[in-house]
Length: 237
Image (tube, rainbow, N blue to C red; front, side, top):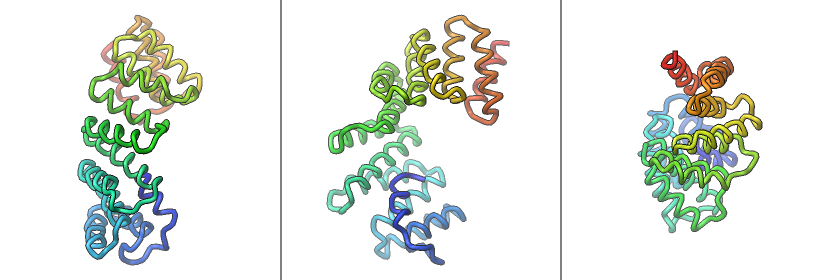
């Protein structure tokens, strides 16, 4: 569930039989996202305002209708006539950018982040990572690696993502060093284990790659990257 909706949920009144507040919306989405979306739309028409729009977007996200949810949030964030607390507007922008990326529209993610960086500096760690993911989705691996160079030195997820960007950008040696740095901070991080293995494989260290991927599979058997690791091991075998 996105951050903007959670920001309102903190202040919500107890849930009622029909959606009238963020707590009621959360309960309705848990029961049936499709029904919650319909009820949120009615709530909006009856004057539910920002809360109702965030509820509708949250329901659409639960339905995996990411583009529709992103469009609602984008329009809400960019409506200057809508009085929103600055922190809430930033959260809505960031949620919209994340959902556009989920909808395979990294171009719109980057456009929103560019606008957000102008109106609400400085860039947060989460915003840097989101930008890097969008750059990587567009094939700009060098740009993604450069973006992540500004991330917190102690952020293992950022280091693992930068390792992927470096590897896909053609520098497996640097990728391996970055992945190992990520694992030094978080030894069981799935992305760190996968990228360390992938970089090892690309530098010719098949034994290390196998050991890292087997470690990933043992620690996180149901993770999507474990599936990728199994596929790589089968191909190498």
